Image (tube, rainbow, N blue to C red; front, side):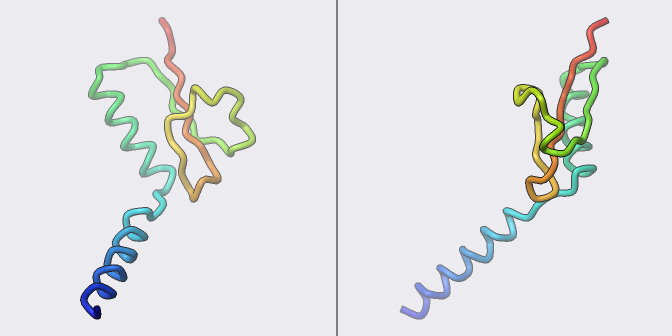
Length: 77
């Protein structure tokens, strides 16, 4: 029974560590790397507060504990 309780506690601690929030700049850099890997050359990534989001389809990430969003816009030539 002690091993079972220990396993539950370890799983809970691991889950909370995985759910740690990322900084907006760190997440933006990761998204930017993925976009560039897909050879997209003309785009804009912008960090905005939740109330500044007008189109949810443009949101590509959430950061700072859910208080900000990263929005993506492809710039056509």
